[in-house]
Image (cartoon, rainbow, N blue to C red):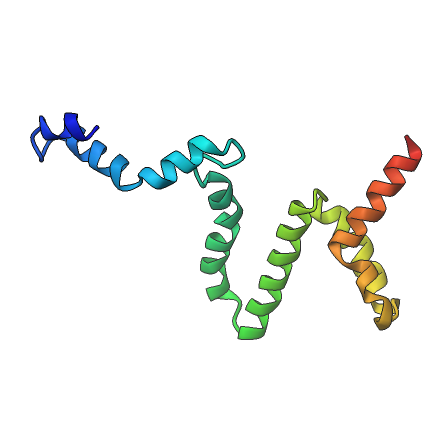
Length: 126
């Protein structure tokens, strides 16, 4: 690539592409050496899309506390998706029982614990 770049005009698109590839060579070779690495960050960008959209919506909550509550729900929804749970499937029973649930056992209602419970129930049923 160095050899080809030297034969091109510095202002050509091809020379620019080669210069870009060479400046990111370490990342490129790391990706080629490790098949577990993603070629792009599209998954991360999709995951953050709700945050970006929410940022615009937070302006219209009327108070900081409303924005904080909305951010909490966005976090719960995103975490539920990461745990492989349908957010409504998680939030309906939790919101129905959280008021009566003992505070010293609140960990039982955490998303990952609910996901583990559901996995073990699914395994038992199979």
